[in-house]
Image (cartoon, rainbow, N blue to C red):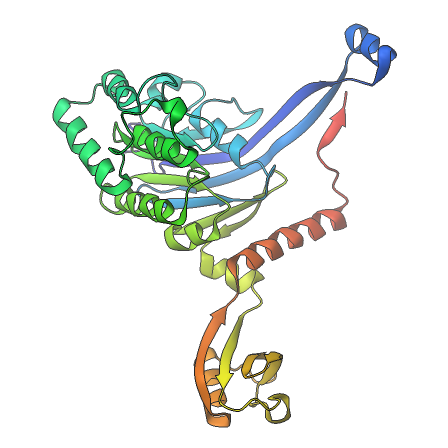
Length: 350
């Protein structure tokens, strides 16, 4: 099967990764025991993770710190070999054919660089051009494109060790995309960037997906990034998939719904004559927040009309559930389910 003949660009089925480390007890006795009869601890970082990403899609893999996101990406890039399960990227098993897989992917790990520390960034790009066999014309065209979107030329003659974190990650992103790979893995790529640069990166990623048809797997803690880029979201927690779906599906399942924010002309309490189907959540002078009271299934457009009919307002709008609150609710729901099932923390001593 060729890369483009595979049904999915990225596929993970039942991925498991368990790490075994030695536990050392304190004191001289603990040191002696560690030498003679070391105590081994098994920690499961990823447990039965399954998902797939179609060609030309952007998927956000989300979860709290330690959830298993980076470990999953390292198995998909071929850095780690799964303890169980299987994975394929463009029809290739990444941890069995690392060199072949490397030509099909680009990767950015926000805390690490693939650039040469003591060389100017532009020299690193030239080395990567030769490694991947990028034609001179394609190389010049792509560097112009990256410079237009990421403004690299102002610092690409600076040694990598002297770049700021945001500048270095921008260079890493360009380096990962230089050979035009069909699949790109981005592990917190906008870490350390200001809001202007973050938007430049988002523009570049949208262009890569929409115009070039690249497949992107993104991890991030920036919910604005998720809302603006992601077509689909996979939530992972304690190494397990919590939810796989669109943002709308996640909001419907875990969101608290919507609210009406209104600014009234008069500042008397709004609770006494609240519109039907709504209740006051909070009032601060003329600013009032309403939410459905659950009596008649009022929809947002109806709610706006009822507030306007009942009060004289100077400003009014619908506010959907904050995405961070929605994600937090999903994680807490998963935690409650795990506690109910009596699951342990994944560590066993052998």
